[in-house]
Picture 1 (cartoon, rainbow, N blue to C red):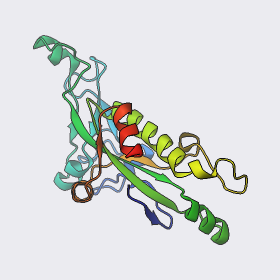
Picture 2: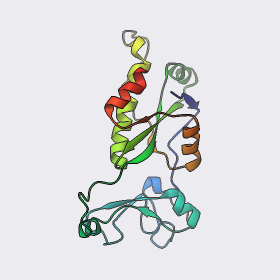
Picture 3: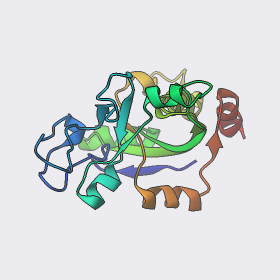
Picture 4: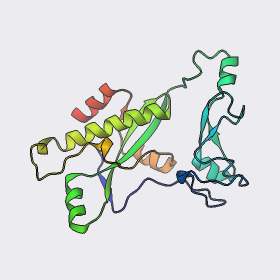
Length: 201
C-alpha cells in the first residue's frame, strides 16, 4: 500500500485551458469550443439527450485539442445495433484515488493546525466509472479500518469512518499518474472479495 502525504493536497481540478472555466465547479462557457456546452458531463450529444445517456468529459483530450471531447454511448444506437444491454459497457480499468489521514498525519495536523491529507490508490476493473467509485469507496473504508484496527479502544486516538469524513476522491485521468501507478505495482481489484484479499495479504 502506498502512503503519500502532501500539505494541502486536494483533488485535481479540471480547468478549460482556453477560457479558464473551472469544470470541477460545473462552470463553462457556451461559446468556448473547449468547453463545448458543458462542464464534466453533458446529455448524449448524438441525440441531444433524448436517450437519457450522460457522457463524461475526456479532460486531457479536451485540453490537448482545444475542443470538447466526450466519452459515452448513445442508447438509441446501442438498441439499434442489437446490444444485449444498453446500460452495460465492456470491462475497463480505472485508477481510484482518495485522501485520508493516518495516525502521524492526524498528529501533525493537530500540532500545525493544518488539514493535510495522505493519498492512496487502487486499480479497479468494472464496467463503468460509477461502479469503480463505489468499489473504491468500499476499499477506502476497509483500508482505514485496517489502518486503525489496533487503536479502536484507544480514546486518545482519532479513528474515523472514511466515507463520512469528506475526503477527496477521484478517478485519475492523468496518463503519467496512471503509468506511475503501474510502475508501483498498485493492486487491481474487481470485487469486494478482491479488496479483502488485498488488504489482508
